[in-house]
Length: 252
Length: 362
Image (cartoon, rainbow over all chains, first blue to last red; front, side, top):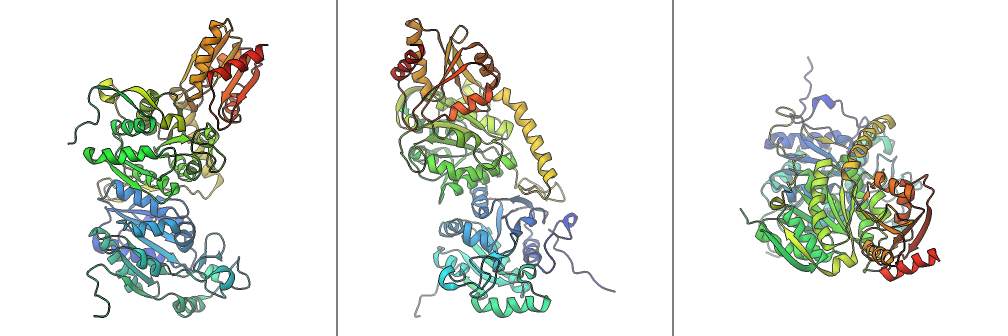
């Protein structure tokens, strides 16, 4: 007898199976988020905003109130909701293009204002929905549709270190972490702590989730995981970067 | 419970930006989101000074994209939310407004027009008519009130919240730098005491109950998979807009019945035109005055009737034909001769209008 792994309770069964490509990491990130929502018992309090890009496919993913916004504009939309109704728990869900390129000013400003929202950014090193163009997170030498000979760091820059940037600019009270779909328990815990941080009213919370895109990476199952755990881990360090609480003084 | 911002009626002598802030307070606006740009800044200045007393909120955002999208968020949370902008800010604001059109969100935007294109002047123009009525990558499903006096700024700021929440189309108060900055006498009032009932608001997200159990979850999107899916949604929206248009459309006119030439203008320019028509009448010229108050939707019936009678139509505006294009679309088929006095980015005086009419009449 095979036992089906349980879906998070807050997932919307009617819209499953989901619409992401086979092997996509979004389903895993949304599973971790779903588990965190279930464990915290906040399904009736969450307002979920999704960006444009592959993340737009999550607009009917959960049995929670959901708003599909514009490319890069999810942070301001959920900020507007939270400012107008502080009783809800706001999640902004976006990709690396939405968060680090077209919406970077919103990410920076949400972080510096310590908005009481939780941003979850899925990093798969390129623009998935539009067909695999170079993103701020594309790694040096990585081939994409707009860097067909490999990303040249000299002329196009190096991968954005998102959580590092947010941790550097966010005031005390912010929570910042980078997880990976290769470690689901840890990713779920990071997302849960990020939500708890918002619920406690501490400040901005931000989790980057390293994810998978076999469609645009053109990788088989084995190479997909290799791409994440060998190539991406070289540039993107998994772990917590900022945790609220009294900071130990340097040098002590 | 904080006291009402305005009790009874109060004669005031203030700037237009101050009028807008007071009117939004009086209308029960709960939150403003904004980004600094001249000439609308003092709306934020007055709002932020007054709100602690009345329990309202403000957020200064990082740009107009954010100001527009946070306003969208405020409305989604069920609040009377508004923002104010001008010029290049209005350009950026079109992106969030297109989301509001796509989701029928009742945001209110006050525009104090400045010179264009680009940064141009911080002073005045009527060059944001095309952008405000038809901006965004869509069909212009919005309401635009063009005000001419401080009293109208007050009246229509209040009204814009009701129009927005009744019909669920983004709604604009289109002012300009002159109206923003000049002082003028007007009457402040509490809408309730004038019998104006504020249309109640309701939340799109965060309503009581467990989504998927006690109630359906709110799932709002602006992306569609199929052409036909989008087409069907838009047909519904367009039908709603067409049905609402005659109820929303407003205009002001006089002396058009026997006029050979009717002067068409909007906003602050209509004050010069009004004065010109009165003086020209005294001098025996058969001229009339027509002013659309709503630029979107246009007062089509009244304008077509007027154009059917007049021999000549003189469009006067502080832009190079932005109102003119809207008028021509409405009166298509009319045989009236189209004449113009266009002064893009520059104010128009009654003397200039009179001179132009005399030039036409020889």
